[in-house]
Image 1 (cartoon, rainbow, N blue to C red):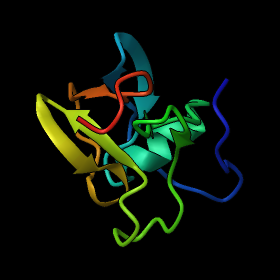
Image 2 (tube, rainbow, N blue to C red; image 1 turned 180 degrees about the horizontal axis):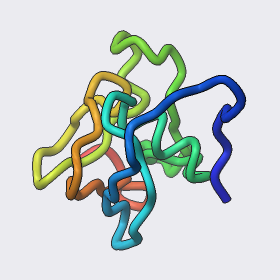
Image 3 (cartoon, one colour; image 1 turned 180 degrees about the vertical axis):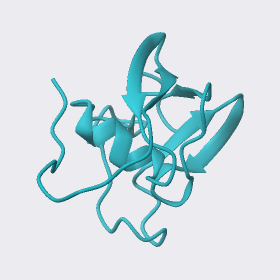
Length: 97
């Protein structure tokens, strides 16, 4: 289920990104965090004690939105623009490392 504002919003054609092995629609110009939240992803990583973490500040300060993107670890999803074909791994079951 995708949750996005639609009325009065103009977007480019959707692209596909892979998130934990699943294809989800996204739009170039939005952040990876926005695409994940719109697709229903609520846990971006877990702490070493197993606590779920998700975006908090959405401006790159808190580091709660860290994911793996195209093999790069600890990437802030709220600061990374979507591009077609990117591969995102949430690390929801992998702790911080």
